[in-house]
Length: 231
Image (cartoon, rainbow, N blue to C red; front, side, top):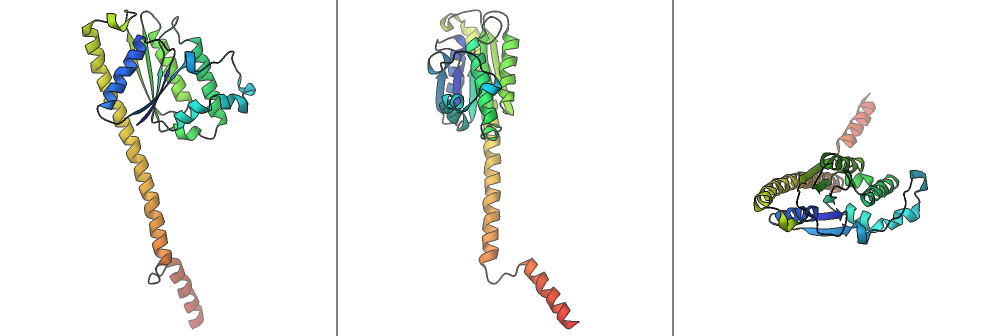
């Protein structure tokens, strides 16, 4: 299972630790290939672009992230609440990502992927932030979207109480099983479609190559000629 994670910043916040808990829970049931991006160091972007300003150079700047996203099965956007909203870096990144997908021909490839937003806060704005992140995932064309959000008053993960960590672990495991269920459903659907395509090609090749099988259309045409000859 290919996973791409986009972090708001490179600091190991509570949001980062929640993502790591989820990845460890998924690794217990399936083999993972994880690609992580940190906006503060892996992605440098100044200013804001409007849709008419997008060109090929702008798309090429996002090429590596888009290629990783196209080959992934699960997209995780991890963003802690900043001033009751997502950070400016995350806003600009999501804006540019949506613009690139509007121009690219690979938009249909993202439909069957799983999108997950993870956010934490020590104050207000958690519901609004998680709603905005989930809406951005839907705008990219992702049908299966999930969210995980928690209010943690402790700034450092080490300061979080053991009782709270155990509750988070329990919720993370439930979330991992949901993700695995969606992944298996999508994988089985793709495999069934591929099997039907291969089966239909094999049948057509068998009919065309076998000399002992008379095609229905050919038989109808010969019968028509025979009736005309009798009359």
